[in-house]
Image (tube, rainbow, N blue to C red; front, top):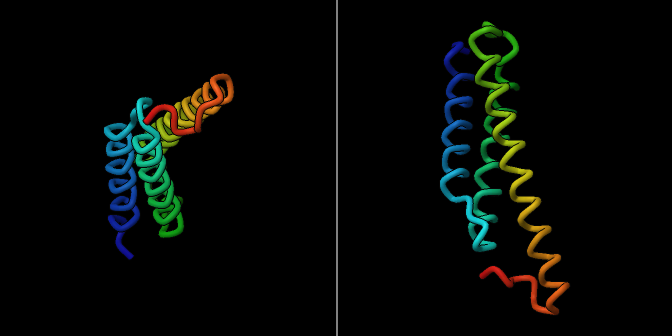
Length: 102
């Protein structure tokens, strides 16, 4: 396997993270759901790349990109979690359906 194969998965993961950022919206549950989907794809890309040999490649070339990618995924995940919790709490307070942000 060429060293480029795991890097291709990292590139793909970064593209999915970009899509997640673009789809993020606190205004609709659909935006949050789409963002979460793209985050899942980014995580899958990291895992596939890791199984194909991230660890055997030059760690210095990858470490910064991987750390940044993981931090951004975690940050966006916290935003989704916080937004979802906010709207659930709001719906409980107002007695409305959970889809209050639609």
